[in-house]
Image 1 (tube, rainbow, N blue to C red):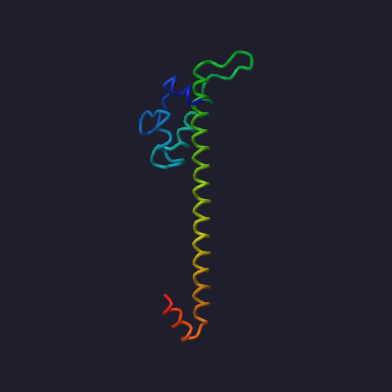
Image 2: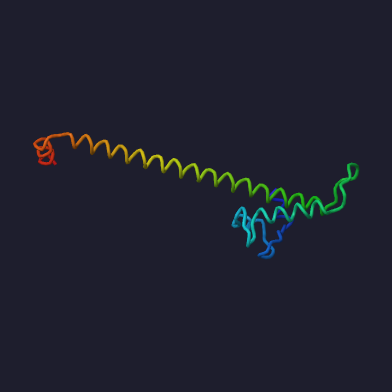
Length: 128
């Protein structure tokens, strides 16, 4: 699909102007004021629906195939970016949980250390 895009030199219309397939990776998933993958996909989908009525006998015209390819490319970029966002969110949650566990371990060690007598603590300090 991306090979076809590069061979056909597909361009995607946006509020920022005409974008290449590579530029899609730099866009946010959604945006109210700027170009986004969602807005581009909606525009392509609208154009695809507005194009000539589909025939179940005659093969789709070339413009319809190009629009379908564009939509498939944008949808794939969206799917990958959603997966990456979910993975980053999960990694952040795991990192946060690990920090909490490490903090609890340090607290328990401090509590254990606090149970020793002053003499024991002095001996430990002297051994260091």
